Amino acid sequence: MLGVGSGVLLIGVGTAWLVTICRFPGSRVFEWALLLPLATPAYLLAYTYTYMLDFFGPVQTGLRELFGWSSVGDYWFPDIRSVGGAIAMLVLVLYPYVYLLARVAFLEQSACTLEASRSLGCGPWRSFLTVALPLARPSIVSGLSLVLMETLGEFGTMKYFGVTTFTTGIYRTWFGMGDHTAAAQLAAVLLIFILCLILLERFSRRQARYYQTSSRYHQPPRYPLYRIRAGAAWVACFLPVSLGFGVPTIYLLYMTIANADMTLYRSFWDLATNSFMLAVITAGIAIAIASIMAYGQRLQSNLVMHLGIRVAAMGYAIPGTVIAVGVLIPMGRLDNALDSWMRATFGISTGLLLSGTIAALIFAYLVRFLAVSFNTVESSLGKISPNLDDASRSLGHGPASTLFRVHVPLMWGGIITAAMLVFVDVMKELPATLVIRPFNFNTLAVQVYQYASDERLVEASAPALAIILVGIIPVIFLSLEITKSRVGSGDS
Image 1 (cartoon, rainbow, N blue to C red):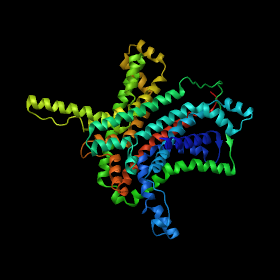
Image 2 (tube, rainbow, N blue to C red):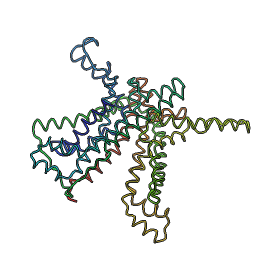
Image 3 (cartoon, rainbow, N blue to C red):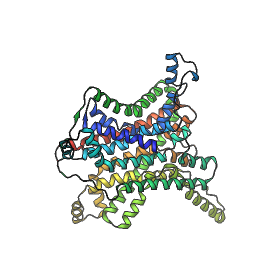
């Protein structure tokens, strides 16, 4: 957590300030390109770089041929399968959380504030440290808390690198030792860590409030950079994008095309169908539930409603392994109780009806990703004036008719966005799928994990590339939305 937190703050905040306030070659491209690593799950990055940097990988093989080295004793090369390697992988894919929120915060700051600091003799760096950074602190801390929660919940990278964490311990205790009680206890301790992070983020902001004192939101001043400074800024923005997205994507594409007979196998399309089916069903149910929750809160805004919705939307902060344990234990007991009753009453064994089924897997997905759909739908619904509700009711429409005839068409863009986000998250989800999936039912993420565990990355390249390509969709959409709504596009 310390290593990943430090890395994402350095890269996320630094690049956000450079592309927002400075002008250098490629700065406009980097505004959206810096979000691309969001499409790459950390475990895919870990598999790809391990294959590239291994002793028989292309990097070390090329170095030995170039310098005439013959064995490991002739040179030193860092071991990527270590805590340091895991930190690097997570930093490269998680820094966009901090970058995104920090950049939005910098864009929302009034240009008058920065102009006032310049008039008082502050240079660009001093204005950043004394004015812009403190104003953006709530957004930066929010992004950092998301990164730390993702770090605590990461499974694939830690398992592959052999780094022992709570998530790998829960999986090993459940499957390796068969001790469900100990796995539940580890999951409870991990939940305590997550709760502490949430409370720490709230406490860090407690009574602090950050307001703009002017309504002048025109184009923030952009400082032109030349020569060495421009080159340094370009490199600082290019390296995270290339290492977090460009290099692994190009390498996976090369392996997929070069070994098409091994990568585009028949089962690949079956895996893609399974993943697509799960993602579509989960996204549809999540949108329906989120719309009901958001509309119910609009109609009955009371303490009980708010409390119930907040509890229902807490799942995104919980790692997939913890949710898997929390789903399987009660479902397993319910199955056993029902089977015992059917045996005693009718002499019939029902077997497992819930646990280890697709229904249980979709339920776990909903627990995990309902917050994603709800927050997006709630935001879209909140922009609709209550006067439209009154007008609809005055014309004889009830609440349900108003929702479908008035609200849904107006917030259709938000609904599509929410469905797309849930779809992509389900496609990438690994630990919950690995634990709950039915026997002989695999997804792209599970297949990539199994092939990578067997050191068969060539076969894993096609499903890994498919996951990345699907993940690009919301990243591109998000970058376009930010560009359209940027504060500097004109006075408001």
